[in-house]
Image (spheres, rainbow, N blue to C red):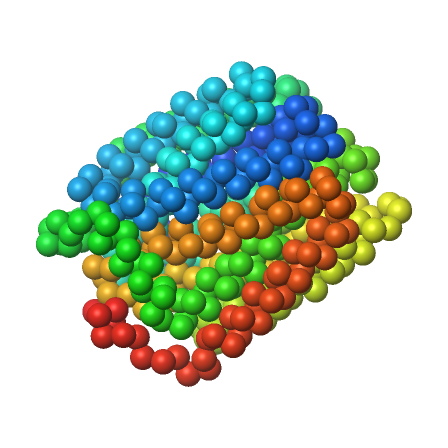
Length: 412
């Protein structure tokens, strides 16, 4: 994995992405505590709705924005979205109403819906070789894991000194630093001009057609749903589970989210070696089937009276969810790349971004509203059933011997 660090462009781009994600991690903790202040024991419903709005922005904006962005230099586009996100983060500490949270979250995530597919589409241009690309994917996954692990730990430390409002200032600084790094980086040339002249609608729809036509990609979408069902309970319900069910302080919310990041990071470090020995299918499907088993344990945990064992059990469960989600999601870029020609990659990654976040659009509000209305045990059980059904669908859709990719979608 260390070989990818010899590439200066990737090194700087990864650093920019990691810094921005670090700020996002601080915002995740702060937003949870802000929701708890505004809504009390209904914080799960508020967070579920806010995260659903985030997914609406991702699903609706990513394909069209990515297609339109073919006409905009990549460096300009990435830096501009960082500046927009910094401005929104700066405004979050001043909200006093729940609707204001929703409006700012939509603006923030609309910018992210442009940034992330554009960032993903640059990586194959930096690393055309399959082995280097696999290592770059795992390294990129580590950026998300660093956010999940170290940002909550940093937030926990900062919360002993300042109020959570100041965490949003850290988010703003992260986005500004990311923009500065991107501006100073020379990125690979985008797809040829003939591809850029294609209409926005055609560019947005071509990736969707790719997912419709290729069984491996339909299975990948089902796997995203399995991971979304498990991940939703972590990101939506942790604050209520920790503060109300277990009666722990605000800093414990950060530690619980950090456990998720730790499991995800360890798995990402192991994946390059695993993927040299096993096919993507052999790694992703078992991980997907492990997730509903963990959710069954979470249902049992939340249905019983808390005891001395409850806190370590929760940390172990969240670490297991992080590991399973990482094993399911990280190889997804390899699957997409194997099903698309080079010129189709921006549209393919935009479609993956949009469709996969459609899964989170389902599970985020479900995790929030069920927790507020029916309780945490029912929430974990329902999400576990969804995860199991999605994993089973992926098993049935993804053949052991992949069928040929349609001619128009064959990689170059």
